[in-house]
Image (cartoon, one colour):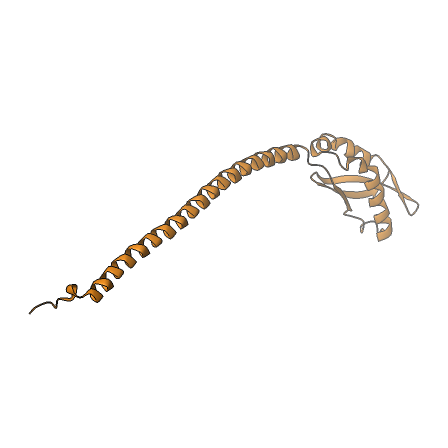
Length: 167
């Protein structure tokens, strides 16, 4: 069997030459477009890598500042609220309004600790206790005194009191 002699016909020669030239041109176009895309992607990757390095550096700076501020704030946490609770008011059959007035009077007496840092308040715990216990309270023509049962010092100063007759 013999291969037909298409290589001798000019139309087939032009067809094969056009295919070869078209393939070479399309390959060159493909390489150009692919090279441009790769160059753009390489620039983008370099830019993103630089941005990541800058952002990581910024994160380190922010974290250091944040840690430093946290350490400073931990040292300076302040009392922001005072809660007073009289636990045994039912024993003396006191009305709620009188108990409320007494709690408010104690709160007014010790409101000097508001906005003070916890360390200062903890050091003056005995002074606060003396202020509360040494002041007699007059309710319904009877004199009472308060005794500090429990005192919790944090951002909220919580004081539980017991009331008893003054001798």
